[in-house]
Length: 389
Image 1 (cartoon, helix red, strand yellow):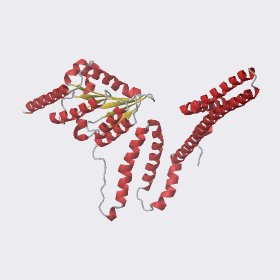
Image 2 (image 1 turned 180 degrees about the vertical axis):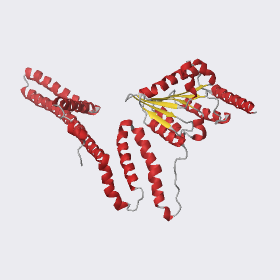
Image 3 (image 1 turned 120 degrees about the horizontal axis):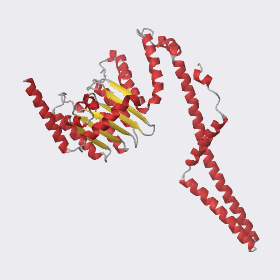
Image 4 (image 1 turned 90 degrees about the horizontal axis):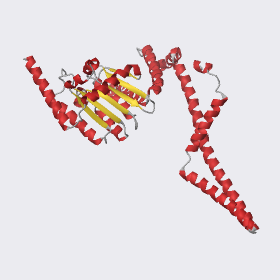
């Protein structure tokens, strides 16, 4: 196994940094002591001090034997409290330190493994192993390259976040592994070969995976379209959103009706979609807000951003703990082309657009809004019919 190039150039950890790290470990262990343990330590210490004070008073009035007993017992209580405190604190600190050491060791091993798998090392290792398992495999070189690339990319997903790891692993298992297994059993009968049927299914999985890892204080704001919610296309996202509301995750969704040229949703479908979201709003304990942006609201926006409201939907996830934001943009309304970024330069304009459009929409979401949407869409259908005739 080769040594990672980065580790050769690294200088030994300085004495001060090691001391600081060990001090932090000790303080973390101290904070883990339970109420019961603190209670016992303080009680024993208090009893010991009280007995020592009693010893002085008893000795003063001439009861020497009783004074000696109270002194010895008091010292015993004090020593015991110190021993209990020291044992509980040190045992936790030792466990934390050992866990940190194991984690550091595992991290170094992973770095070495990733280094071995990169470049020619991984390809060479797989090239030596695969022939014995699949001597007649046609695209062996392509399989080796794809496998190495997959492992390298999976190792980097830890930087992106849990949602990316969950999404890729599930997709890999359901689409690649399970279908390869089914094909391998093809001679033993009929087997179902399954792939995600639409881009919307993949989009739903990505959004749901990210929503599932949000915690209290995190948020998600999105400019959405009714077409993306048609036929339960985002059912998993809606289910994970309900779970997120209970964790105090704040979601703002703006349904964009500014593009009146989109005929994919009927007035009845629009009403059914919005009724479901209204139920979620009412059950969310104010964690879910919805507004509808009509074409008439365009005039409330600065002229520089009005054209952007007719573009594709997007969403911005905000991780408050990591101070990280993820922007997901769907470059087609069927959700088949997805762009992701965590760069502020890329998502800053979208964030400003959302805030401006949210304020322009203004009206609180309710039954009256759903009625307006239905009338708006019926009017547009009539206008298109007249124009066609």
